[in-house]
Amino acid sequence: MPLERGEIEKTVHLQKGSSFVQYVKKMKGVSVQDPNVRLTDSLISAGGGLIAMILISILAVSLGYPMALGPIGASCLLVFAAYEGPFSQPRHIIGGHILSTVAALSIWDLFGRSHITIGITLAVVVLLMLITKTMHPPAAASAIVAINTQTGWGMLLTIIISAIIVVVISVLYNNLFENRTYPRRWI
Image (cartoon, rainbow, N blue to C red):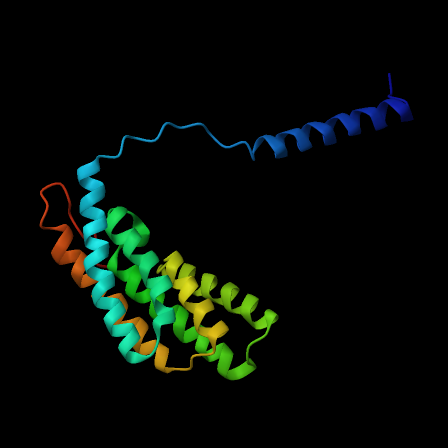
């Protein structure tokens, strides 16, 4: 027995309604209990970040690019608190920061700074990091800082040296502790 027009519309409406409900349910998230964070491990992570940021802030300020401290500070958080994670590995930190900053400064040179070029910069940086497998979220911040502050190519040297310092200090510092191994992989 064929469905009449009203019944078809009702069926379509129910299907749309259920897909909307499913869509909204996806936003709920999953309830997971976070593992307990040990105070000792937290203090070790904070100590590494302290050492790295003191050295990097001296460098960045003396070179005239203190705006690099934000993205590099976020990198420090990853390498000292989440040192086992994929975004914390040397290839991602150094490659991501260099690639992102070069892309941002190139876009700025070619097109200047505008709301559109800032958006394009982020899109290009995300695409490049995905293609090259150098995904590092703080590196995207390096790109935005570079184009938004219009610092010029001098910032690139600060970013490169800072990223290398983060990795070197992390290798030396994290491996001092028995329960830490850094890096998990170089390439």
